Image 1 (cartoon, rainbow, N blue to C red):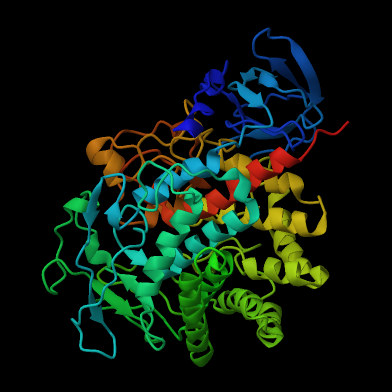
Image 2 (image 1 turned 90 degrees about the vertical axis):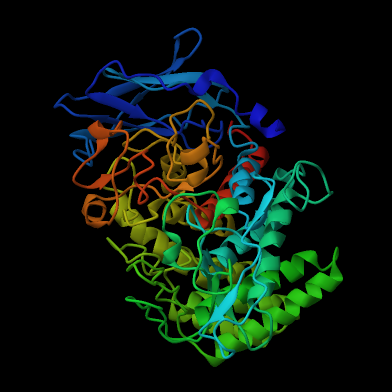
Amino acid sequence: MKLLALLLLPFIAQARADSATAWIRINQLGYTPGGVKVAVLGIKNDATVKTFALCEAGSNKVVFEGKTGNDFGAWGPFVHSWRLPFTAFQKSGNYYLKAGAARSPEFRIASDVYKGTADFCLQYMRQQRCGYNPFLKDSCHRDDGFTVYGPMPDGTHIDARGGWHDATDYLQYVTTSANATYHLLAAYRDFAPVFTDQHTASGEDGMNKVPDVLDEARWGLDWMLRMHPQEDQLFNQIADDRDHRGMRLPNQDTLTYGGNGMERPVYFCTGEPQGLKKYQNRSTGLASTAGKFTSAFALGANLLGKTDQGYASQLETRALSAYKLGLAKPGVCQTAPCGAPYFYEEDNWKDDMELAATQLGLLKKDNAITDQAKVWAREEPVTPWMGADTARHYQWYPFHNFGHYELAVQGDKKEWMEMYRKGIDAVWQKSRSNAFYRGIPFIWCSNNLTASFAIQCGLYRKATGDNTYRELEQACIDWLLGCNPWGTSMVVGLPFMGDMPEDPHSSFSHLYNYPVSGGLVDGPVYTSIYKGLLGIKLNNGDEYAPFQSDLAVYHDDFGDYSTNEPTMDGTASLIYLMAAQEYESAHVKKKP
């Protein structure tokens, strides 16, 4: 692929530190000339480090010197830690940092460090396709599925083929898929120039005069239309945790659920608790799922209206019917567990209906619908996990509220962006006391929260011009790309030759050494959470043992599904985030 040529660079080869007690963590992808540039120094002894130097990689010449500033003290595995800012240096080239006894890996400063990254991450989305899978060049789950909980008799066949597998398992959820679809559509809307056309609609190599990101979004929309087949019918989920019975490729899945042959259960949205065996969720309504259907359909209809009016009309019809169902049954529609206690414990729905109303109001040019969005926005001004120490799994989802930004774009930025600012500042108050500016709780899928929070920071800055939280925003991006205690990127295959997940929790890589390129892994979790999870066993030791702590752990090991499993919805958020970085770096000039 052409975009890989931009990543096949030797600058990012992981360098060993000169000392076993001091490390400099960097964004391994690199830094843009006009962007925020900060590394983090962590040490495990009582030394004091007051200065650092930026050196040219080829000549070893010192090109910039700076002061470390305040010692942030102990955090995670480190006894002392400092931020190393070199934002003022803007010359492109290959460099490394020195501070005390530590030396960083080499990195680039260049305007194109993010170029091609969003397209790169689309590889993982294509690999997660259900139905026809272009990576395997084969189909899977052709017979989906049979209904459960519906008004029709259980076991009734419904055509629910397509969509994406949620993660390494083959469950499928509207909850995450609709959110992913919205991010892909919004990425195309906001940053179309960064995306290329290297694949056909089926995901295979070729060109179809449609950017690949839009092909991928439409794959999600097609499946969602099957999951909302009639105006009074919503389905939310395919399969359940009975899926978790051994590793296999999707086209080799022979697991049966007691239906007709290879059909899998398709869960009807009832708005009441569900769970076929020991465990049940706490559903109270339809609005969280209905709102997600609506926002994706409405945005899709807006974007595709000029190129495919018939399809756009179909999306508009279903956006309206889903919205009506959300109005009729407010409340949350959680995913359904079965034999295990894990499910997506979403507890909020007004954010989903707010976003739905912003998009539907825009599509229909109906101010009354937009006014209803404002009511819901004022009832949940801040996404509740922001500023909290913990939350249940996917308790507050999506992890940032796109609706506030959409209202700001349509007018009265001050009120809606003040809501964004309050959420950002709540995280900032927790972040400012540690050198990594880490204020996001280490709950399951912490990387997904990190990507979403960085998006919110960027949208706030874009809408207001306020750079107060610019360094916090960049710290989140840098965290995902290596500026974290473990010194590893959290994206499989990115950057090439960097320290990145090499043994992710994936059947593709574990069974056949197939790369799962572009996938964002779950990320670190509180050590207390890790110790309480079922079925985790490290298979290949712990290469990051020196950097584990009582605070949080991360393992690049297939056996750790809690920190090293790529997820589809997290990757979709990352695609939006990387597209934003590439687009901005191409349009921002260096400061004089």
